[in-house]
Image (tube, rainbow, N blue to C red; front, side):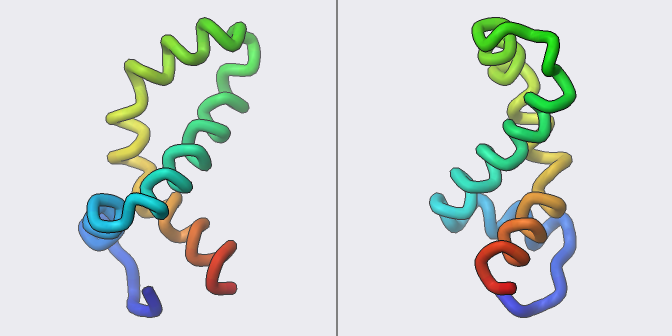
Length: 73
């Protein structure tokens, strides 16, 4: 993954690489958890079920970039 990245490319990468997708989901989930620190674990898990699709979509580029930095940097 050494080419320039855009939203479409990031989303395609998530769709094609389950390891990357799992990593990205956990990374995005951690970011969301930091924002919702006042929720109990149970409340957060319920919240995550509802916001996950949106966060995965809007955060694809940022997550794939973070993955690249961590695994290729």
